Image (cartoon, rainbow, N blue to C red):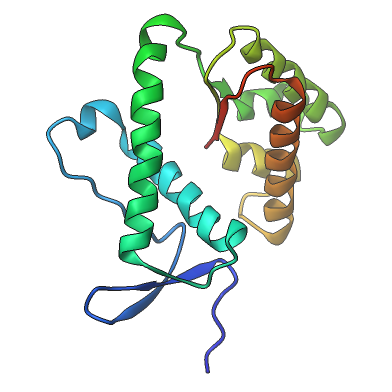
Length: 181
């Protein structure tokens, strides 16, 4: 038996075929009249990665049917579709760039995390339903000081995501979504 890579899920197709895919190799296409006006392709990639993470890490699954994955992704997108419409007109928040924050702190982990918490607090002042941070991959490579992704990068990425999750839990008075891309 061949060992499955730790970042892969086996997708069971309707025809009985099984295909191992990672979150990076997963391709999502939505067809519909209003889909492109609601979600851009980058947002769809991140939503799919989040659903992938949910099955792989939260549910500890190694296999998932395409139907299960699609249903979960539809639920996530529907939730964002209903929660984003009012926000666009009333409380649109500019996403924070993690690469800029890393550059401001001279790529120092010591100063990066306090500055990241400050940026989160600034976004929370507007009582948003969604908090956004962009440029995670570039930021991680800046902080680690590498050009190519490595195991140290994965560790730093996990630290940043966990830090943000904990800060949102501690700082947010209302429930809000955290989107990091």
